[in-house]
Image (cartoon, rainbow, N blue to C red; front, side):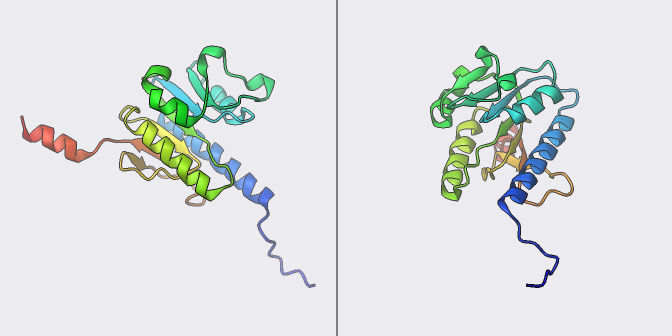
Length: 183
């Protein structure tokens, strides 16, 4: 069979593109945090690669991690007070009690390879964080968070749309207009 020069996209290629996109979006979020204090929430620890990346890019910041079954690389284990063990469904309803109130960045890496499960999990995360996150908090996510409170921000050049997402938490302007009209 003659070689056409066009090779099919493999799962390895897709994985690499996802990691490149993840790093680019996290680095863009870190740049947007310049001059701002506050804590970071890592949703999903896995092997600890993105936790380690954030820890290196944001030295001295508190990084709290939610993970249902923590088994990272030994060098990437968060300290006990900053590791919240449980599922997103268990932890997010208790966010005000378990998570720092001064969050400036949330990284939600929740993809499972199952599109239906990903959509359900993204909805749980979007809804669970919606009322808790402060105005201006950045959210980097491997899944779309289709809620009005999450305003999409531009993703870095070279990253295909939909591969990774970056949002800023903004409250509805309608609520501000109602408050302003009453004064």
